[in-house]
Length: 114
Length: 113
Image (cartoon, rainbow over all chains, first blue to last red; front, top):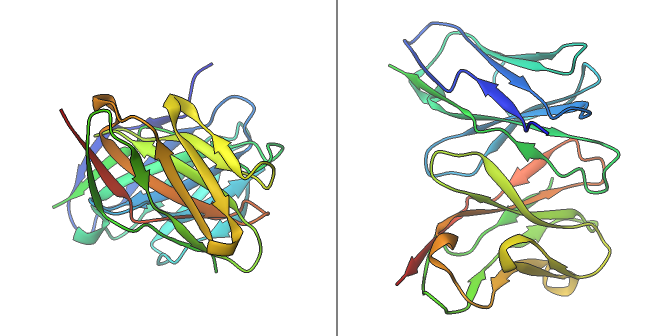
């Protein structure tokens, strides 16, 4: 089975621009979460979506938004990019029927803001 | 709120030696606990998880972790380090809803030949 896929792999943007990152979960998984991982740190939770509804939100500004589509894929949008938004953005999918809700991660999108 | 603390941002061991990576959690109720490994320029791979069943959890690649409620710890061990174990290791916690995951800051493991 295919794992979690993310696109694009790498992205370079300038300050003030907007970016959209995409994620396709493992087949059968209905929950998608987004994380930001700054170099040298652990992933920080941004959003979780389940059945197209937001179930959790981390401590990120309103410039960050996301949505989940009927096929359970998801997009993360970041507006008015700042240099500090440069990071690896990870998407993870999970199946709430699984005890412990273990999350399966994609390879990430490396965003560089210049 | 849930949180995890990983003691030691860098750990070095000799090949064949015991690996011990420390993780302490902060939670008012027994949580779900996880260890993930991240190789350079890759996503995170689940090593093992604790879900209130057996306190000693066995994972992939010979790793295991023991849940100790009295110490609020979930340390990761491997009896004999291999060169391929060199990576970044993250401890994570979630509550029973699974709506949020909290990761530690990570421990970079170096294996010396």
